[in-house]
Length: 147
Image (cartoon, rainbow, N blue to C red; front, top):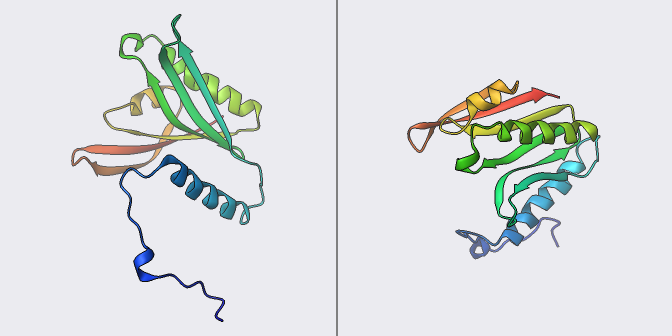
């Protein structure tokens, strides 16, 4: 028997809106594989900060992950009625501080041209890459900052 894995041609499966559990399993397998190839073997730490009102409704929040010394900001959102009051900046700075306290030295994120590249620039992030053509009229910006 060959040591090569046998895959049936009809076993390929394309899914639209796949179950989150399957996507998480795929991501977990990639993370395990990555861990075998790098020296730093810390687990990825999920981080999030939420701002809620008296009724516990979400008003703003930020989420990201710390892997090794790199904080990756995945999501930042502030309710429309609370924007331009410094809440987004406070969330980013608080997440950076939490990551730095856990050994983080770099933060990375991405944003679209219609979202917040200028916002991140004001917080000290520098753009290191731009991909044009999203939605045929937008750009995706990749940013980083030393913590």
